[in-house]
Each structure stands twice: as C-alpha cells, then as structure tokens.
Length: 263
Length: 263
Image (tube, rainbow over all chains, first blue to last red; front, side, top):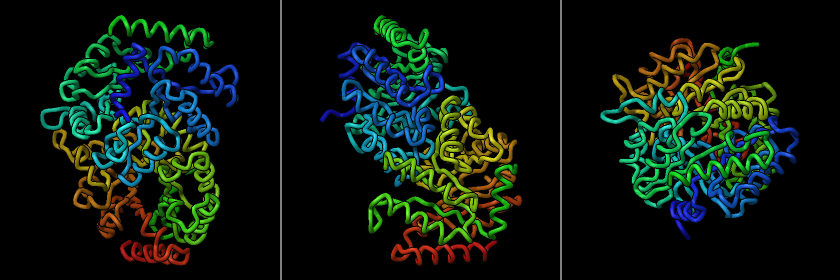
C-alpha cells in the first residue's frame, strides 16, 4: 500500500494538475434548496471536473449544520469519487489523544476520507492519533490565510514565528510520509521560510481567488524540494458564472490551465 | 434573555455545584453495544444525576464515529436535558470566519447546545462568529491538560506564554458575557497567572481524576473574581464501579460532596 504523500503525488502528476476543488456547497445558495438537489449538484461538479482534478476538499462546517443529512452527504462524496481523486476532510480537528483517536476513526473509517486537516494548538499528542495509518494523510494548520493568523501564528517564540515551530513539529512527526501543511496563499512572503523546514511535505494552499493570494508564488515556492503544492479553490469554481455546471467546468479548466502554465 | 455566563452562574449556584459530567460514551465499552442501548444509557446517566449536576459536556469525537447515528444521539442530549442543566458541545472547532459561522449554526441551532469549545490557533476572526449570540457560550482552549500543551501553549511570546495571550484575546472579545476559558487542572501552577487576565470569565477545567489534576486548586483559584470554575469529569463518573447506574449516581454524589467541601 502506498503512503499518502506518494499517492497524492502520483495522482497530481498523472493529471498534470495541482487543483483542489473545495466542495463547500451551501444549499441556501442554490436555485433549489432541497438536499437531493444538493446531492445531485455535488455529483455534477465531480462529473464535470474529475478528469482533470486530482483532489477534492470538503469543509465539514458546510455539512454539519444539515443535521441528519450531514452523514449522508459527507459519506457520499468519497464513495462517489471512488478513488478517482484524493479526498480531504477539512475538519480542523485536534483534541487529547483519546478523543483525537475517535475523530480519526470518524474521518478515515466511518466517512472514508483519504486525509484530514488538524489544528496544532494542543500539540504533539493531539496530532499523533491521526498519523497512524500510512495511507491516510494529515494536513496540519501552519500559517492560515485569514487575518486572524496574525494574532498568534505570526508571533515569535525565540528566533522563529509560531508557524515555523509548527512546521518543525510536523516535519519531526512525518515518519510515515503522510503529513502535510496548510499554508495560506496570502502569506507568500513567509513561504520561503516555511519551505526551509518543511522538506518534502506537501502543502495545501487556500486563499488564492477571493482572498487574493498569489497563484504563481504558491506553486513556485510550494513545489520546491520536489513536493506537491495543492491549490484550493472553492467559491471561484463552484459558484462560477451563473452557477451552472458548464460554467463550473470552464472555471476548473481555466484554473487548471493557469496552474499548468506555472508548473 | 440572560447572557450565557449569567445563566451558567445561576444554574451552578442554584444546584450548589460546579460538576460538569462528560457524556463521552463509547458503545464498545458497554455490555450491550447497540445504539438504542447507548441512548438509554445516556438518558439513565442524566436521570440519575440531573438533580445535582448543573452542566453536561459532550465530546463530539465519541459520536461522530457513529456516522448516521451521530446526529440522533447528539441532538437527543440537549433535548432530553430540556433546560434542566447547561450543555457544552466539546467540539474544539475553529476555521475562517465564513466556516466558523456554519459551525456555530451546526452546534447552536441544528444541535441546540448552549455552548461550544473552540480552538484559538486561527485567531480572532475564527472565534468571533461563535460569540454573536449572548445566550450561547464559547469556551476557548487556553491551557489544556494534556502533555502536548507544552509544545506551543507554554512557549513565551515576549513576556508571556502563548496561553496568556489567548486569555487576553478572550477577555477582549468578551463583551457579550458569553466567553470562558478551558484551563487544564494539571496546570495548577499556571492558574494564578491566567486568573489575573481572565477577569470574571468562567473556566471549564478538565484533567481532575484520571489525568491527576488538583480539585482543590482548580476550584479555589478558578472561583476567584467571583467566577465559575466548572470541574469536568468523564470517565471517573460514567465508568464508575461496575458501570451500573447506581455506581454512576454514587460517583457523581461523591464528587459533588468533594466540590461542596471546597466551595
């Protein structure tokens, strides 16, 4: 069985792409708000993009608010993708060891996602339970794309910012080649310093598009050390144009072309 | 409508208790592993303790792994408690503003919990969407009870440890009197310094019991500034003795007596 980072790399290279489509669908923003329409819409997005898109990310916040429909929708996505792409559960979990173990079971076994995002605030023993399976990936929040990243992440502890300490811990834990980092595209001036300590770990990069991050810097710096720089796009793709599947397909193709020009 | 902190305080004072029972039930640890037995077991715990217990906390990790049964179980708990006690969804969420808003909806509206725990790593704009409703509480992870808290939380930024910076931000955001802190009982030597900046904010204190924290210090220091120090106990109560309801009731009563001696 391939380790997660190798599997991710193979999939991205095979599709010659680094696009990660964020399937963050709000049924209230659709023409039809029913759950079955939402399900169909998600499947249509996947159908229209799966040939070129190597990775799909699902932010669990968008689904948990749907209560009893949440499990249906969340479990449907990896099942429908059926190993044709990598799936990321963007859950930002992190708890004491015992509880993290249960979260890992929820995401990797019950819902069957290939990887998860985790928050590092509680430290090493809160992250380790997610890292046990080589075939399942863990993207640790390092430097996020939002304004609030300046509250704590940017602050210096001894010589280095907190996010550098997080990247170092991630690197230390990466024995199974299944750990990556979340690095916001809006923080391109910090990317080089993170890359210095992140080795071959893949990056998941949100913040290109609505948040204004640089695609070129993200890919160029993120791909150093022969690693994978995944560029996440949610709203710019799933709400492209008039919201129809043709426009979504076109937005994914255009974004892919931009990425391929830089690769 | 009362703000959350006032509601919490009234409930604790009325029951003359600071016990928070953690309803972290693992069906695989029960004599009967069926979901309906689990549901009955949770209701029995509540029935046996509701007269003396002011607060129940549910760690979502234990339920999310149950997939389609998760929503049923998680929504049943506040419904069954039916305002006879305060409920905390121990979810440790935190995301960019837009997503945090959806998580707040999931916990406060869909599941109808009175409060949530959140992780501060992503900063102010990741926390604010949880704080909008005065009647709903937000416990921000400050200094946690696990070993990994030493990786980042204990590290100094300028003069103060990261957890002090988190407590200060929490205090700054607490205009609606609905914010509290999570402070691990194992960290009693740090409690005074946190209390200095946490004002009247209530504390949720895990780590007494299995993790070895001090009950006396937790209540004595935690109650300063006329604030509420909630003492969480999960495994020591719900798996007390032979696991029967009589033993659970007795464990809750004994713990309550210990708390009342110190109050």
